[in-house]
Image (cartoon, rainbow, N blue to C red; front, side, top):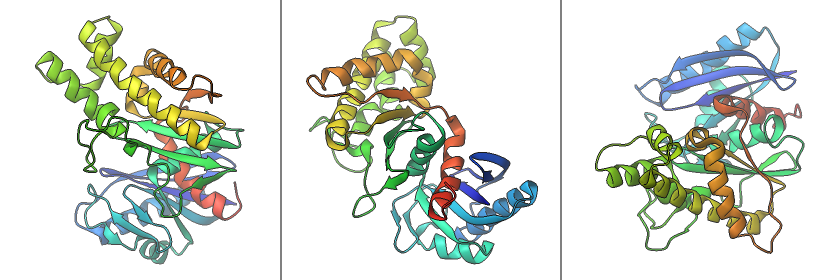
Length: 300
C-alpha cells in the first residue's frame, strides 16, 4: 500500500507517492496567491496528479506545512508566506477535497522524519535534525515518531537563547540561535563587515579563500551552532544529529569542522552524539510529508 505526500511551500507545492520508501511519482505546482481555498485546491490537484502518475492505490495523505500548527484541531495557526493561512482548518478542508485521511506535520519535523527513516539517521532509535537556512528549524524523532512536546512547539531549536542581549530575532526575543547563526544573520554580519551586500554562497567562497573577515563571520556563527547543539545533547541525548539546510550545504565539510570544534568544546566531559550532514537535500520535505502519513497508517 502507498501513501501520498504534499509539501506546501511559499512558492511551490510538491506532491509525490511513496511506495516502500521510494518516491514513484512527483508533481510540482505553483502555490496560488488568491487565498486559502485555492491553495487547498492546488494541493489536492497536485496529489491527484501524483496518484494518477504512480498508478498506485493510496491509503492516506501526509501534509508538510510551514507555520505553527494546532495538531489536535488540524489547523495552521500562521503561515506568513501563504495567502489566507491564518487559523485555517487545513486538515479538514484538504480531507474533504481529496477524499483520503490527512495527517499534518510541521515542515521541519517532516524533514527530520525523512532523514531519520531514509537519510543520514536511518537505523537509529532517536535523532535530532537541525536545518540551518534562511532561518533555523529542527525536529526530534524517537522510535520512528516525531516528538512534538505538550503544546506542539518541541524542538524549536532556532529559538534557543544562546546570547542574552544579542540581536533581536524575528520571534521578538533577543539572542536566539537563529538571530546569530542563520543565513540572514550571516549575510547581515558579512555585509556590515564588507560594507556591501554579501550572499551566503559568496561568504563561504571568501571563507574558503582564507579572507580574514569572512573567516571571522563564519567561525562566529559556527561557534553558536556548536553551542546550541551541545545544549540539545544535554537535553535530549539523541543517538545522532543531522545538519541540513542551505547554510550547511554551502558550508559543507569546512563549515561542519568549525561547528564540531565548538560542539566538542561545550561537551567536554559529556558523551557527544555523532553529527552528520543531511543526505536527502530538497527531497526531505516531500519524503517527510509522505512518511507522516505512512507512520500513522502503519506503512513505515
